[in-house]
Image (cartoon, rainbow, N blue to C red; front, side):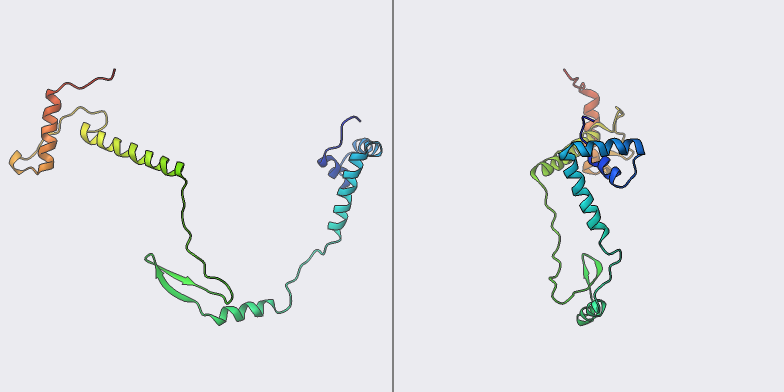
Length: 170
């Protein structure tokens, strides 16, 4: 075998997951290749050490009693923050949590500014053109004397757009 064994193949060989023919080829390679044999021996040592670890873990005696004492030492406080009721628990010996700050990078701020500018430009264009894809003039339903200043300006702009030719892009 001219190729070195992959780590996955070594794991399979160690866990006896390979068919017998492939396992025999792998063992033959390990006998001939010092590099793969050293890596295989390291894997075997690690697996053996992991196998010797306990399968269950238990909390130290009296752990929960200590937690309860700290919780009872400082009662929970309620308050209002940002219009919402907040329940806060503080534990002795712990710093109070600080407010989280949002921070943005310069490219993020530039992108947000570009989005706002495009949205604003689109809104102005739609408002001045009478809507997307329409060339219908603004029609006043009330006599001009009863219209407010904004409606009179819109009516004047509509009249001007009928008289002035629209510019065409080059």
